[in-house]
Amino acid sequence: MSSSGYGQKEKTLSRIAATRLQKELTEWQVNPPCGFEHKVTESLQRWIIEVHGAPGTLYEGETFHLQVDFAEHYPMEAPLVIFMQIPPLHPHIYSNGHICLDILYDSWSPAMTVTSICISILSMLSSSTVKARPPDDDRYIWNCRNGRSPKETQWWFHDDKV
Image 1 (cartoon, helix red, strand yellow):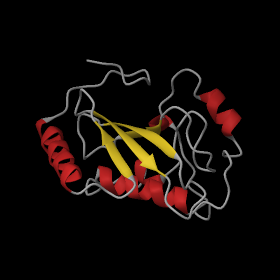
Image 2: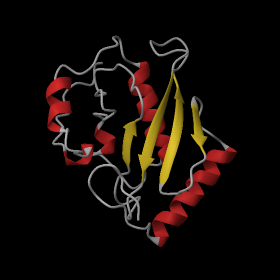
Image 3: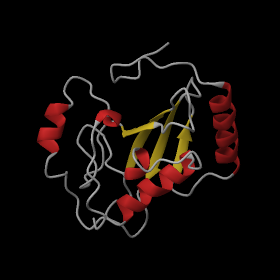
Image 4: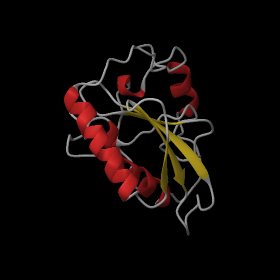
């Protein structure tokens, strides 16, 4: 078992999760969503996805990387999705890569897929009118200093106008 980086050990994927992820990966290879590229990893349980800023947006020409860690009981449980390296400057993306997006937490549905997550993230980026960190970035980062997972955060989804 490998560490997820957030103080908890990953468990082996259930058969249902592994089957679902294999199906999603096959679909991704046949019909990848525009603006995204799956990077090959050693594990089906962790995907690295390259995100390309959409043309005509503040992020046009920029490239970012998402790390998607799947829980043992995916799709019944949402994956852990964070931006790696230097995350985009966005009012809903913290400097540690955590993303404040309701579908990753409270509004998750087993009907969602990696593709639908990526499209939601690209839509969030594309609709932004300003490149800035969330106003509480410093406080949030300080609270996460001991490896706190974004899934442990009590998010307040109040601003959909950014």
